[in-house]
Image 1 (cartoon, one colour):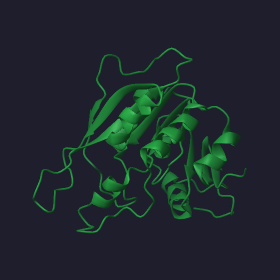
Image 2 (image 1 turned 135 degrees about the vertical axis):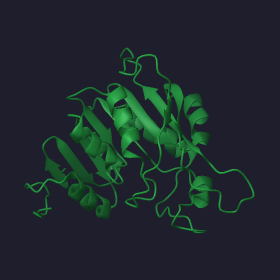
Image 3 (image 1 turned 30 degrees about the vertical axis):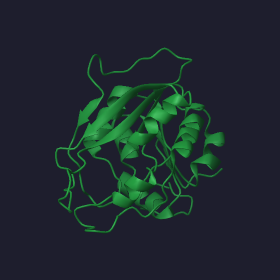
Image 4 (image 1 turned 90 degrees about the vertical axis):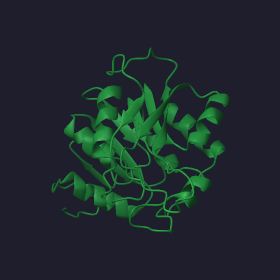
Length: 231
């Protein structure tokens, strides 16, 4: 399977993750942000979208979430870190997935509850899983799984996560030289952080517009893109 982009330890595939992971072999760590559930997608708002949900991609259900985490765990040597619909995590654990911690991303600058009829949502869940075949190890010492970082609101992707949050996750859950997978690449922040922190990275994204955007964000004008485009 040919990559969309490949340069200096960073590889991008324009495809569905199910089609790619059988070909990429083992990775050390996965850090990703898959789709959430229907209720969350419909209720999502941003500071610029008003009453319309900014999310333009399909939602998934609890069963599909457990299936994708299971597939990712099968090729990940250590940690799988997944931003998640919070409702999915208990079902994933019931389905036998090795959930180590229910992590929390706290947002000091959340999107307001525009209707004003109930409290706004100031946090998102993070599923923290680990391959049971290997002893657990991370770089966070005795710190907690609560991460407090403001949103960037860069407008690159409707569910993009903050750069500093991804830096914290990459530093704590992976080591220099590790291969980090993001099978729902989106705006590519995980890949940018890995490049900065001397990790290798594989990004998979079904929407070509994001593959092109991430190649540009990486700022590499070498012969990276399979189409011969110089960014």
